[in-house]
Length: 70
Image 1 (cartoon, one colour):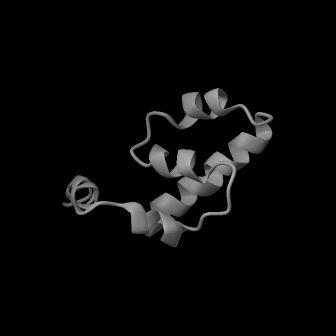
Image 2 (cartoon, rainbow, N blue to C red):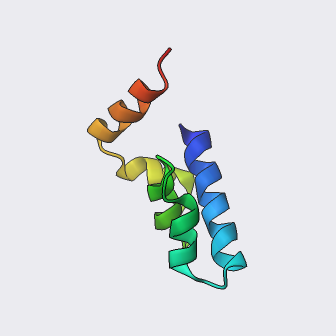
């Protein structure tokens, strides 16, 4: 999960710069991803992946874990 969150953060920050700080353009690109929340929260700041993990509620963690069970 840490890998997915970090990748989304990097991707969203890259898009934000590429789209000249247009949040709507970033939202259209990453909006359908389950981890888009991390991308939105990473735009315009220097939060780390550990900061993102700290804000996850147990219910949200459980949801992501269930999605990736085999």
